[in-house]
Structures are given as structure tokens and as C-alpha cells.
Length: 264
Image (cartoon, rainbow, N blue to C red; front, side):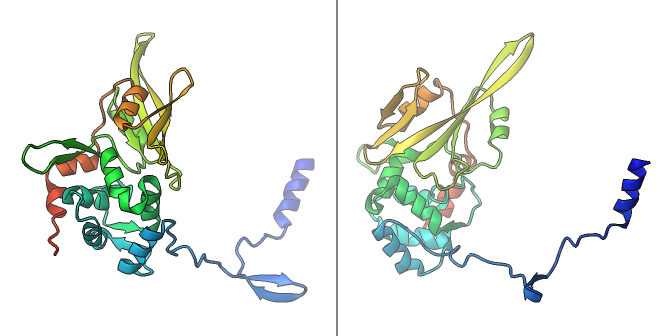
């Protein structure tokens, strides 16, 4: 009978309003306001030269198209390889790894300059990381995009499962961690007659001041090296890379064609 009584009491208890448009303070009615962050789209770039470049070309716009971004960058860095600069602007600076992404934000630009700056050297520094250089006698050197950089991945687990015993490099989930890259790889093994796959994740730290890529070795000690390929080979035990979507697009020439800008 006790439970029935409680049940009866619960049935006659007035329902609480879950949603209300007003709040009552000291007997008066006051509106409940929805607040917005007015600084959410504010342009904040730490490097002074990079900020001046952005303001000169894009004023207070916090998001622009990759086409709008690429042209002034090509003019700002005329001595850099044109295709390298274009691909950096369209796919690496925005950290997306998406061959179809059409915009870049001031926040993404700020992160790129913090990672590879100062601004005057950011393209040259990034080129050493994301491109392989092929020397050509009597002509301009050729650059090919690395296979392993995937930018932001919504589902890195799926990529790993579909590509056993390989590795990839992606942006960390915390988008403001400009000094980190996340390295993921897998290992297949057999246990009790079943073929299993183990997934591992490590962080690679970019020490801009010392020009080193720093990682933790198997013995727990920190190791640094100026060549990222050396770091990745040690971290992944020499595993081959999972080819990124943007690498595939570049190889198919679609990005090279889209990145052709004629300027004076």
C-alpha cells in the first residue's frame, strides 16, 4: 500500500514547466535572454606581420574562400614554389585534409603561423615538413606532397581499421594545439587462433625554436630530430603511410589544375 500511496501522490503533483520565457525576481517578471559571443568571429592573429597581411587583404573578415586567400599569398611569397604555396593554402593551412574544402579562417591561419613561423618563413618551413623535394638538374626542383598528412579526421579509427599495419598523421582533437601532431598506427597479430588488430596513438611535438620534432621513444626517453621523416619512422617502426584524400587528389592532378593562378 505504501507504493500505491506514493504513486497516487505523484499523479496529483503539479508538473514542472521545462521551458519558460520569463524569470521571476522579487515578484517581478524579467525576460530570460539568450547570449551570444560577439568576439567569436574576431580576427586575432599573434604574429604582427601575419596580422598586417590579413588585415590588408581581408580586413575584418574572419573566414574567406581558399581562392581569395591563395592569390595574395602567392604574391606575398613570390620566390616559393607556386604549386607548393597553392596546396598549402588550399588544404594544409586550413588543416582539413579535405580536397573539397573551400574556406580558411583567421584562426587556422594563426595556428599555421604559430606552428611554422615567423610569417616570412612559414611557407618555407612548412614545405620541409609536408613536401618531398626532388632535385632537377638545370631546372626548378619538383615537390611532391607527403602521403601521411590527413589534417582533421572525424573518424581516424575507421581509417586505421581499413589500413592495417600502416600509419597516418592527423591534427589533434584539440584544435588550438598548434605545436602537436597526432600519429596513429596499427599492428595485426594472432591470439587464440584469431587475427586481431591493435591501434596505437602518439603525439609528435614541433619545437619551432630549436627546429626539432620531439617524440617519446619506447624506453620512455625523449628524442628530437630536425627531419620529421626520421621521427615518424622511429615512432611507427617503419610502417608505410596511409595515403590521404588530398594526396590522392594531388596525384590525380585535380589540385594542380585548380591551383593554377596567373598573377602579375
